[in-house]
Image (cartoon, rainbow, N blue to C red; front, top):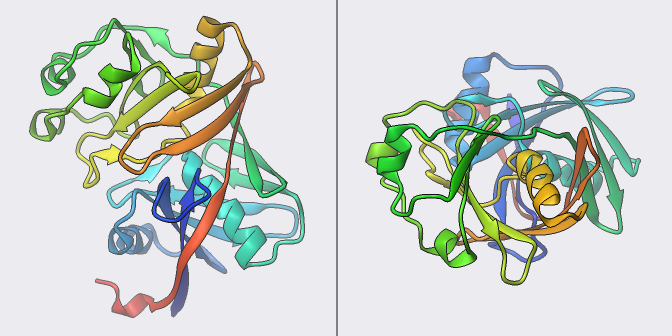
Length: 265
């Protein structure tokens, strides 16, 4: 069985930036063990598998280790793949996922993801995470992910994480997001995943399901410009819609390949 694999950078408009996802179109679902095998082979933060149906697209997300309940950048990359590579003839895509039906609207090469809002609540930080990070936060929130709030952007840039210590905690399918107000944006963030082959995620769309409602309340504005300031970085244009969050960005296809499933170990 041959697989078409599209390598796509999300939340960017130039090559070698943003967060990479591999998109694999299928006719029918493979066994989960095969989906994980393909994801490990791709060695990117997320691989998305899609099956096109009459009025919707089935979508599943996998890291090299686990299946995820929600992924922003791979959803954006899947929409880009459908429109630009598979010639999907609609400016509205409905994905059926583990997180329910998700809509993506395409406007002038910008993909607007309509995701569920996940309002984070104040909590205490586990000692393992405290020991793993070089700078302690002002306070801590949690929804799926731990949200660590800091004083300024320089804290977010300078923070370091000890992977050996962080790997002692299992937060599947979540992670640790550090955030502050931004210098040239409304807010900035970085995202770290324990027990993952890729410690820092370049751009984490799903984390903004919690970041957007939080910063919208703090900054008293509903439209927000967000920067994820990893090494590759990414820009997200977001809107707080109450129970939903709009997360917008661009994408670029940088590589396509055809691989035999039998050749993947």
